Each structure stands twice: as C-alpha cells, then as structure tokens.
Amino acid sequence: MTEQKHSINWVTFLLASVAGYCDTATFVAGDSIFSAHVTGNFIVFAAQISAGSGSATAWIKLITFPIFVIAVMIGGWLAEKSEKKYRILLVEGIILIACGIAAFFLPIFTTLEEKMVTYFIVMVTVLGMGLQNAFGKLFAKETHGPTTMMTGNVTQAALDLGNILRKGSAGNELAISGLQKQTVTIGGFLAGCIIGALLSRWVGLSAMMIPGVAIVTCYLQGEISAQKPEG
Image 1 (cartoon, one colour):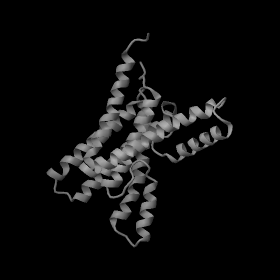
Image 2 (image 1 turned 90 degrees about the vertical axis):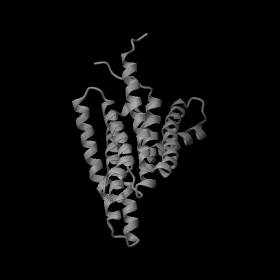
Image 3 (image 1 turned 120 degrees about the horizontal axis):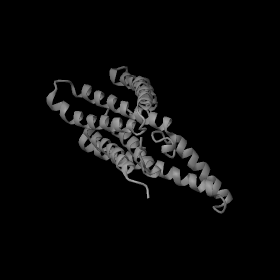
Image 4 (image 1 turned 30 degrees about the vertical axis):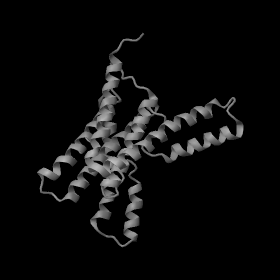
C-alpha cells in the first residue's frame, strides 16, 4: 500500500498548532479545562478545591483523564487496524469538526443546559487530543517531538541553545538542527494558543471546526501526494 508523504516540518507545526489551539480554546470557552495537556486539569481541580469549591464544575475536570486514556487506547487500536498511520489524524480531524458543528447547533436544538453542552463538547475534544497523543507516541518519527506538551521541547531547546552559546555554531550542527526543530514545534504551539484564544472568545467552542478542517486537509494532502509518481 502506498504510504502518505508529508513534510515533517509541516506536520510538526500543524499538530503543535492544533494542540495549542484546542488546549487554549477549551480553557477559554470550556470552563478552564485543558483538552490536550490533561494533567493540567489536576492543578485547576486542586486550586478550585483549595479555594472551597466542591461543586461539579471542579470535579468534572477529573473526567478528562479517563477519557484521554480511552482515546489513547482507541488510537492504538486504530494503528493496528490500518496500514495508514495518518488514519488516526483523520479520525481526530473528523472529531474536531463534529465538535465545532455540535457547539454551534446543540444550543439551538436541545433543551440541555448550556453548561452540559459545553462539557460534552470539551470531553469530545479531549478524545480527539488523546488520538493525537497516541499518534505522537506510535509514530514518533513523523514529527520533531511531542506536539501536545511543550515542557520537554522547551527543555531541549534550552539545552541546544546553551550548547551553541558555549561552543559556538561552528561544528555544532547537531545543536543548531535541534534548536531549529524545537523552534518549529514551540512556534506552532504558541501560534495555535493565540489563534485559539482569540477565536474561541469570539465564537465559542464552535471554533473547533477550524483545527479539524486543518487536520483533515493535511490527511488528504498526504493521500494526494502519495498517489503522485516519483521523479
């Protein structure tokens, strides 16, 4: 079977942007819940509990963790069932598009409380982000590194930068290359955070359609590229 072809820089930048976008969008418009870096919800939960909030709005943040775990398991299953590694991202993109559509129409056609609709959209977004995390672990060579959590990438960038400052750029190609790769990842995540914050504040969680369309487009572009003859 013909494999998809993608630029590693493009895939890394896109996925990091999507993760930053979704994480910020659900935090801004989804009751301060992280969808990509779900362990951050433990901190928000603990902060709310310590402030005396024992309501469901605090405890519901813990639900993101089992949903994330289930999503990663589904990602592993998808990887086993399909020879196309990017099929996981296609499913993620469809999920995010569905989230955006649901966020737009559910308040119009349902009698559910707005909070319940919001939590539903956020949890489904967590499902999509879990698939992206699974993709990053299963197919690590497709990106420059983790695309959903930046702490490790920033650490590596700092090490490479320190190496260059101490030893100079001459003969230090490995550190320079590493710093360039981390710049793509971190820059993509930051760009996604900014755009996600602005759009989600403007249109709410219906803004999830945008990263979904971007990922589906990435998948289709790879399919088209794979069909082109070499040479």
